[in-house]
Image 1 (cartoon, rainbow, N blue to C red):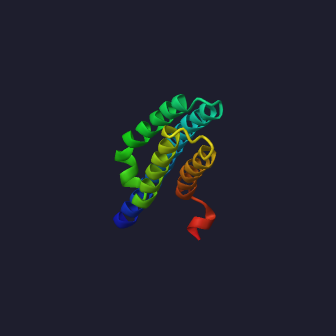
Image 2 (cartoon, one colour):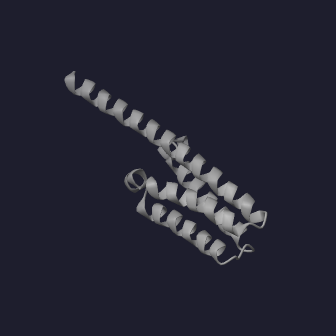
Image 3 (tube, rainbow, N blue to C red):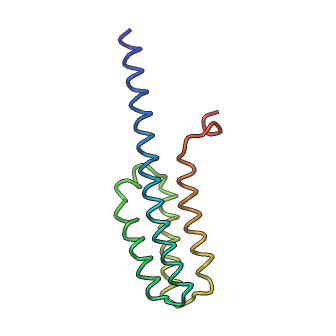
Length: 126
């Protein structure tokens, strides 16, 4: 009976941990996407310098969350998001606002994809 209770406790703790992990990732992603969208609006308005500053804020937040991301996310995904951030920063630094929309889309899609992969669905269980 003690083994069954211990197993139930462990399963409960794992489920609770997974729930809070997904909530934190959703919050982080939502925050970053909002900052990226603010940068996109500035870029579309023709203010590449302000767009770069806004994007830098999002990048700083991404880098500050590395204690979480480097533990709970795959390293290849963390590297890909970081690379997308720096590609977009380079684009804005060079004043190339023509290719920026695609890079904004790529970065946002990658962040949302990571979040979607972490959500529990019937398809991911069975």
